[in-house]
Length: 416
Image (cartoon, rainbow, N blue to C red; front, side, top):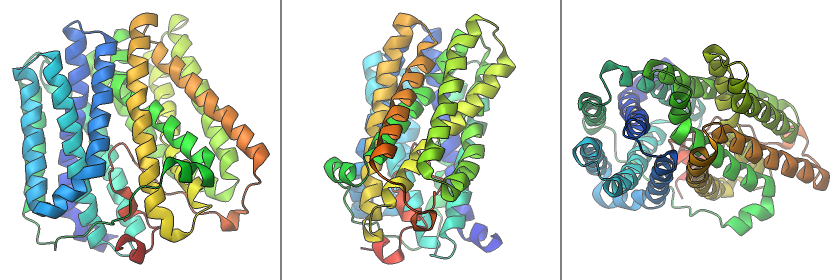
C-alpha cells in the first residue's frame, strides 16, 4: 500500500484540493440563494444544470484532453473553473449563474477525467483495486472537509468564494508538475439504453433511481437543513454526515452483496432508505432533533450511495468482460440523467409543499425501485454467488471515466 500511495500521492493531493474547492462552492451557493430570497425551485434548476454540464463533460471532455494533452487540458479546465467560482459573487444575475453552473459541471468532468486517467496509468491489474479504494476515500474525506470550510467567513462576503477558487487553483500544482507520461483513454462508447435494458432492466432502473436520489440530496440537502432552522455550522454537519455515510456504507454493503443474492441486499438497502426517508419527512413535525436528523441522514446518504455500485455489478453479471467499459459508461449516462431529474423535480416540490418534500420524493422513488426489484426477482432467477461479479465502490457523482480504474476491467479492454 505504501508503494501504491507513493506512486499516486501527487495526484491524490490534487484530487483532495479540487474536491474541497468544489464542495465548498456547492454548499455556498444554496445558502447564498436562500439568504437572497430565491425559491428552492430556482436552486433545484441550477443543480440540474450542473449535472447537465457534468454529463456533457463526461461525454466530450476526453476528446478535448486528447487533442491538447492532459496537462494543458487540466490547466485549462482548472483555470476556467477557478474563474467560474469568482464570477458567482461578481455577477449575481440568475441567468448568468445558470451558465456558470453548466460550465462548472463541464470543467469538473474534464478535471476528474484527466486525474482518473493518470491514476489508471500509474496502477496495474494487481493494485488497481487499492488505487481505487484510496481514490474513493480521498474524495469523500475531501467532500466532508469541504462542507466545514463555509464556516470560516460570512457567506455574504467574498472570502468563501476566494477560498474555493484558491483550492481549485492549488490543485493545479501537483498535477502540472508531475513527470508521469501522458495516459490514454478507452475508446469504448456507451451501450445504448435498449442494450443495457435487455441485459439488466434492474441495473438501468437502479442507476436512474440512484442518480435521482443523490442529485436531489446533494443539490438541495443544505436548503432542507436551513429550513429546519439550522445554523451554517449545523448545516455543515448535516451535509458532512451525508458523505460520511457514503464513505462508511459501501464496503460492508458491497461485501454482503457479494456473499448473498445481490437483489435481496438491494431490497434491504431500499427498505432502509425508505424508512430513513420516512423519518426524515415526518419526525421533525413530531419531535425535531438535530442529533436524530444527523443519524438519519448518515444512514440515508450511506444507503443511497450503495444503489449504483450494486446496479453496476448487476449488469456485469450478465455481460462478457470485454463489454464492461461500454456498459459502465452507459449506466453513468443513465445515472447522470437521474441526477439531473432529481433537483429539477424536488426543487419545485419543496417550494410548493414544504422542505420535507425532498425526502418524501426520495421515499416514493425508492419505493418504486423496490416494487420493480421484487418484480424482477419473480421473473429471473438469481445467479449462483460464484458466478457473480464483485461489487466495487463507485462514486459516479465525481467520476467521469471510472471504468478505467475498475479492477473488474481487464487491461486489454482499457487500452482498446
